[in-house]
Image (tube, rainbow, N blue to C red; front, side):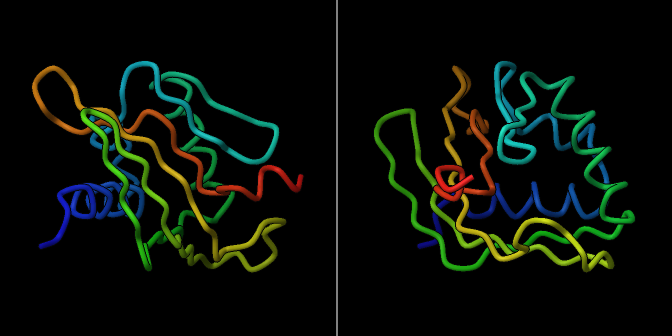
Amino acid sequence: MVHELKEFIKKCDIAIKQEDFDTLMNYYSDDAILVIKPGMIARGKEEIKTAFIKIAKYFNNSLVPTQGEMIILEAGDTALVISRTLLEADKNDSEYSMDRRATYVFKKSPQGEWLCAIDNSYGTDLINK
């Protein structure tokens, strides 16, 4: 059986590819954080949305994220997702790897819907920077 978070993350990836950042923000908790790059974090939906707009521009509006192998560790209303995240774009001179070992933390809302609380596509590579 496919874990519901795999489908959820797939929807997020589609929203990023389509640059539908209003829809994308529906998938984040109000107090979520996004690791933009090592040493730079966006906090809250407004900053995250602005960051995604800038990220899209950085990648010449051609960013296509996909997920490879994924492990989901769930405890109650919290889940840790460890995923091989693959980024494709027309831009080839990115300072950071386009093949990442991401870590995401999700929390269930009071309505029972998963929301991303921590979006870290760099995973443990943050330690090396």
